[in-house]
Image (cartoon, rainbow, N blue to C red; front, side, top):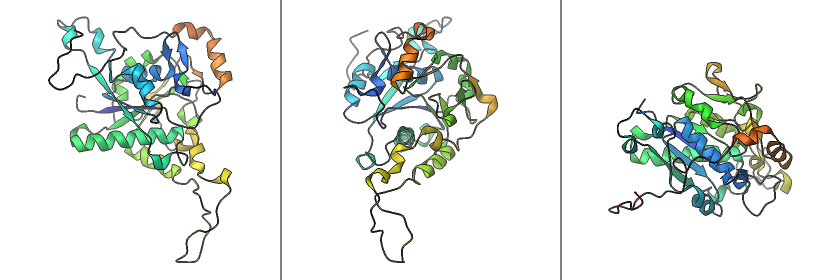
Length: 295
């Protein structure tokens, strides 16, 4: 469906994990010269996304952009062997970098909120251009789940459809807190956002007399509880369509040091390698009126 806009969301901003490195957790290497966030972007490319939106804090965006650039090649369109002019029919997927709003930092900036913020930004930016380019569904790829993204190639039609699509492993999905890809639409967005808004604020929400404002502050550890909401809590209402649920043959959760070490010690790590530069390397769009001398 040429008019179906599938927006890829890569959530990076969120509460820190237990790696405690000088760089962001999503920049942990999963293979030589291959970072976790790059695998997530490549997954969106295999899923058939028309655009990719990376949600990251301002301090990490320059480093991520230095690795990824402004677009990646669609790995399916680049391998059309029967195309008489393959170099002219390649499809570039633009990458956009979405900052977290200052008013959300430290209040509800969990990983699930980065997903929702990326989706609403993709909607607002596209709607200002034309109603015909508004995303109909969003595909989410997480940096902290490692599996073979090429499995999505055979399911592109199901992913870019009005029905929900979800990856699973050992009968566990995003609704169990696993970092496995899935799609959601505007109705799922509203349901998930409603859960985020149920989080506490700075003051107690006790019932007061009409015309009065809350005056009692919550303890610091109880304030802004939404920033610690887990993926399974926020995305529990996402609709599941069993016929569009695909089991991945292997999967590793690397959101902790133990999980990361388990992945590095597994035989599957030898199956993961950086995509060929023809698929993924630093690219920038040409400025208006400027030719690309690289070709």
